Length: 488
Image (cartoon, rainbow, N blue to C red; front, side, top):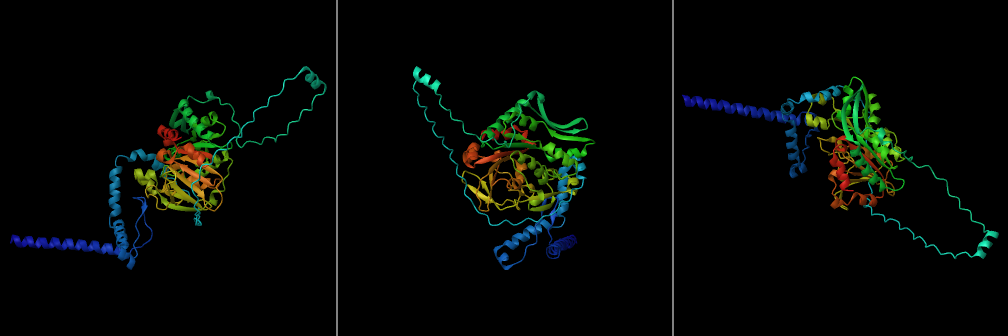
């Protein structure tokens, strides 16, 4: 009797298991064949889900259909979103209180931005890596010829019949320099400890401090870079606040300023061809006016914020920019950046960002160098960028040495160097307006043995201007500028 009961129980279990498997199979077939095949974005994973593969004889023969089907089913199985949310909630337990400011900021609406379709680039023309231009050799100065000593007779004759002295040839009037000569710096007018800060009423918030001595070391480095430039070359720098610090202004009762004392000090004590602008001072007004200059879910500035700052920086080098809307543009929405990636904060997930993807207005070619002559060509906009860090669609993210050159067949006459981390990536479209060659250099990935020293590179590429655009996290980390010094 017990044996018969056991068989019946096993039969019931087998039928139940079979029914569950059949149900799951039917659900899978339904998802595969009957559900909409529109693009689906997973906020939990910050990426687009796999799309349904198209069945074809060639795809089935070479296995691409089965690979696509496997990815599609893995992305669409029932309950997948619930499992991911449950995992996120487990990791977020105990950490929500530290992100209250982000939640408060995220309640603001993201401004609507006009959509402008991206134009297709024409076929690019590949130009070889430049060879170093030899320095002009100075003509030898002729030795002065000796003149005979005057006798009394010749001296008297000279007095009686003086020779007509030739009039000096007229020299052209000096033209106005593109940069004014700086006044002598009054170092005592600056505090001994310089800081960047947010001002709420009369109270300073989020203060970052460096002594004048520490900043003097940076000034020496900047002067050294500037000394390698041609006579009309300019070194321009700025330090970019992280968005999570800038966005705290939106939580203040009486926001008064987002400012930095570093750049004014650097501007005052460096050489005449070194200029510095405070990004915080430039973007405070637009931010308070509701302009979309910093992301909420990502640490970076928006391309619109970068445009406003680059307009100021490039003016120091005598360059101007066209209107922002003149650049070919796509938009990626929803955009959930690095802050969301690291926190999976639910409030941020409800109000995602919009990422402007700007391209140069003319065709360019992009090379990523790993050695003096070793490089690979990459797209300016990398649509396959890391789904967890979509800001890196610009040039595929920061790399050691990335060269962007005009590809319309014209000559390469003006070059600039951008010393930067990830913050400088979205400035490349703007710089291609003024320079035939734009080079982005990140010292964290640079190998001096493979690439050569920075002074050699600056000479080889005939660089006219240098821009230093770095986020505050690296600017206040001594290791970043130590790398710049070692590779000099």
